[in-house]
Length: 320
Image 1 (cartoon, one colour):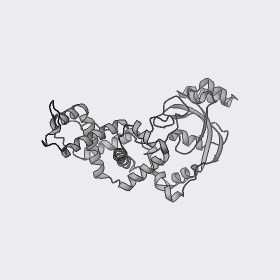
Image 2 (cartoon, rainbow, N blue to C red):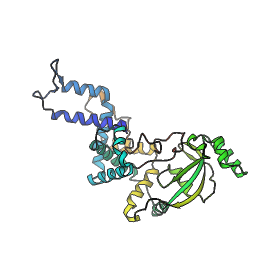
Image 3 (cartoon, rainbow, N blue to C red):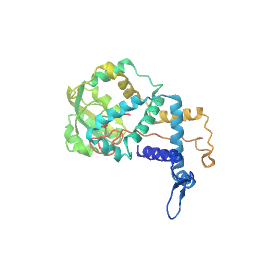
Image 4 (cartoon, rainbow, N blue to C red):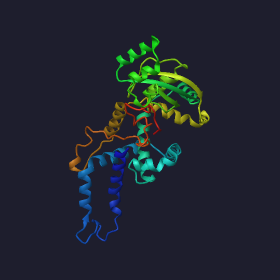
C-alpha cells in the first residue's frame, strides 16, 4: 500500500504542475539562488519514479474506461474501514504513507476498480453466500499446531491420533511462537479473521474434532475447534450484506497469477502507445501491481501482513 501511496502522491504532483501560480509558467519554485523549472522538476520525477507513476496512471485510465466505481461506493468502503479501525484509523493512514483521507480515497477507488476487474468472471453461488452468512452467526475458539512441511504435519497428526496431548505437541512442534507456549491457543475468531483455507477447515470441524493437515500461505496447520458460540457482533440481514458477502467470497477465489493475467489482458486490449521515448517499451511485458489499501502495518493480526510466527499468522484485520 505504501508503494501505491507514493505513486499516487507523485502523480498528483505532476498533474498539479499546471496549476502553479508563478509569474513564469515554466517555473515551479523561485529562490534567491535560482529557480526550479517545470522541466527540471518533471525530469527528476521521471528519472526517480517515472515507471511506477506512469504504470499507475495508465492502469487507472484503463480501469476507469472499463469499470465504474461511484463516489458513494468509495465513501461506503471508507466508512466501513473507519468503523473497523475506530480511533486508530488516522494513525493507520499515516503509517501507510497517506498524507490525508482524500489521497487514500483515490487509492481506494483504484483498488475497487481493480477488484471489479479481477473478480468479474468469478462465480459465487447462492449456497456459498448462504453458508458464509450462517458461519457469520458463530464465533469459534480453536487451537492449532503450525509446521512448515506436510511430512511433519502428518507426523503430528499421527501422534494426536495415537493419543498425544495437543498442547504438549504444540509446544514441541509449532513454529507459531505466539501460540505454541499456550498449547496452540488462538482464542476466539470469526468469519474473515483467518486466511480462507484455515477458516474453511475450522468451520467444517465439530467441537473437539482435529483436522487433517491444512495448507495455507504460512505452512501446514493441525486445527482443533474447542468451542462454538454465538457471534459477539450482531449480523445484519442477509439481503443488506449479500453483495459484500459475494465480494468477500469472490476475492478468496482469485489468485495473484489470475489477477496479473487479467490486468495484462486489459493492458493489451487498450492499445497503449507511449509517447515518452524512455518508456516506449514499458507496457510490453510489465503489469503494474496494486496492493491492498486496507492493511494495518502496525497490527500483527493482519492476514496479508502475516508471517510464519505469532498467533496472528492467519488473522486479518479487514477487506478491499
